[in-house]
Length: 255
Image (cartoon, rainbow, N blue to C red; front, side, top):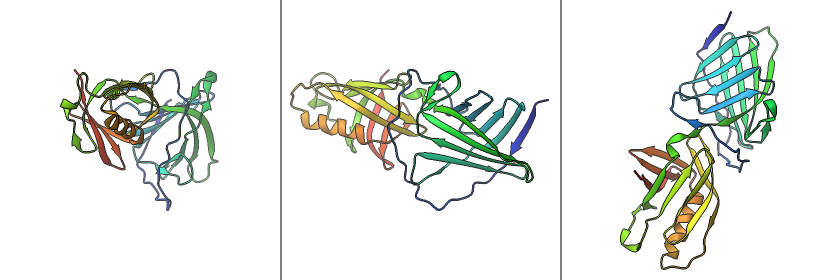
């Protein structure tokens, strides 16, 4: 019979530097799109397919297929390791202890499927039971709201002077499923890749055509801002790119 274990837990605070490091990761051919905040933004599967891990904005779920048992916990923010790209979730209760480690490194899992993250889970039921270990691979689901065309409204706090551009305004189109971006920077066309996790967005491997024009200074600044931005928020059909929690560019969704 399937048994459900509901956990109310607390997170132990670790004394460590929580600076995030964003390393490049190997792209997968297609990325799952996150359709709502109720859906898990991270999903992992055991290398033998014996378990599933789902993390959403509301909860953390570990499902043991062999025991047909669910471990459910209220969502909490992970502890970030100081010396590696590791996110650590600690779940503690009277009868359950679960430690979930997510490593930003390429992983080959069930049926040789490649993922961008390695997952290790340690589970202990009660005081006297032995600790169980689980290994698997996972990926972040890409935010479906990014999958659109965006036109630039402001850069580094200054509204865009539309009179400077004879034809099109600077814009970009993000394809979340292929993790690609392409656009127009004011004079030249550009394309590249995106790296996206929950609330994180990086534009990488940007390549541009080499036409000369009057707005080369603006274009250089625009592309530099894209490459240096690290986070994002979407509100009222606008995409806000951020760096160190400061908004550095605002784009409007093109209907």
